[in-house]
Image (cartoon, one colour):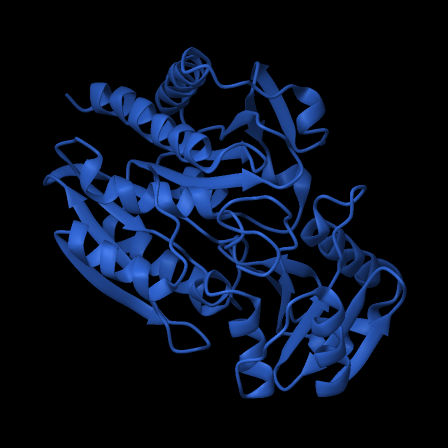
Length: 361
């Protein structure tokens, strides 16, 4: 049975138990360490695995921890199990950074009362609340039967402000904005167990920890990740994501490689992976699950992401694919079982690594 890590300290303890070595890459805004764990053998190029840039996507985090010592390979393995330790410890913890103490609340009504009474209300209507408390922004969007992805709704409202009412965001430039997950019935996440972290760039663009990989100004988490990658230069990389807007389905994101040989291996690994996912009994996503101009689908549930069409700069796998080697992301529908989501992440990494190993025999 897959493990849900309630507290970041629990995740760190398990990481230390499984790893050959653990290195602190840096410390985030609450002082928590961002760590990399070493597994695998000594062969190069190495394998890089990470998750948790959106801490609400906890199945990828659990799988990443498991892979530290369970990925059977002669190649070096480097795992950053989560890139958002603050969000991992929940919305109450994130809110404590602004108000100076750990708050207590049981529902959105109580939470929003605390938010209004603790700082400056920047925007409020019947659907969305945005406040500034101390150095941090906090947002609230309530879940409902029609709104199963309130974190995505809040993200969308913030992006709308950037387009249409940038003056609302002026006090938040260069700051983090935390929002409750609000995911009813999603094991490992639920209403308040995790905080969804947004970061407002100096230009007012609404981004998050899975951006800033190609910018001079960057928060600590992507900055130390870039530094690690420059040191280890992996031959294949994985970022284990989940989709809050999709039921129990799966899709794989791949990246066009800079040379024909690497492109051939990327395509080969993508096909092998999606076949293994299908053989496991998982339901594959369709084009309707990623209705975006960013993607081209080569075969069912294999989406080739083009960051130049998306804007917002490079996410981590965009950056890795252009600089180091093969790169893949997962999207597991969050409304599947926790164990099922973890299994899909494990299958992805193990299958793609088996193809990668053929390249370096």
